[in-house]
Length: 238
Image 1 (cartoon, rainbow, N blue to C red):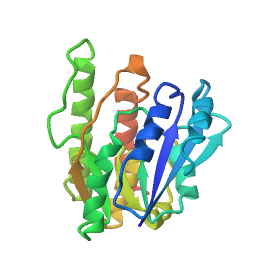
Image 2 (image 1 turned 120 degrees about the vertical axis):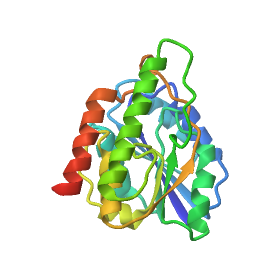
Image 3 (image 1 turned 60 degrees about the vertical axis):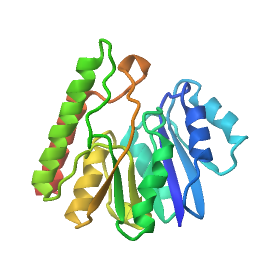
Image 4 (image 1 turned 90 degrees about the vertical axis):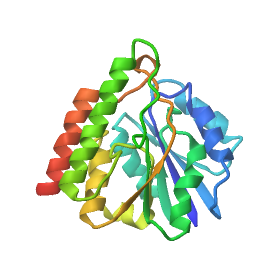
């Protein structure tokens, strides 16, 4: 089994080198892996950091957008270039821990699942004890409500529809005909997988959520509304 690890990145000069190192060093139960980094028009020193770390780790493919086109567009670009049997999406901000990937691959290798999601919401989150706690709690509740709505609309119980950690067969991902350009790609992937009858197997994962002052780009209200629209759109229209 060959695993394609897609890393969409925009202005993550502080985290990208450490993330690439962690992804490359994690021991996976696969025969081969490729790391595809999609630099989505970064305006900081992200590109320089990627080039520097690429000299250390050789199994890296770098694709660059001339301008920022959105996370969805970056992931779609990565999907088009993936050559592995399976794809996993790895955010570049260190919120998701690559050490959780082996546990996500296990049910696939055991023949128990074809699609695996890493769920952050199968347990209560570890909120930070500072002024951002309310914001994280609102984000947590928003994710919970969207996941419950997804379960109702599509007939399969899911605890974390918005998770970035998804392992999907590459041929399946390519045939979903994704069109989203931003964070609404997450509900689009889930909606189209469920409409095609794929069962989503969830594995509990750990996360290290960061604050907006640290570079978090997801806007709870704006992107939550877009996700809500996407869920209804792909259920009843497209």
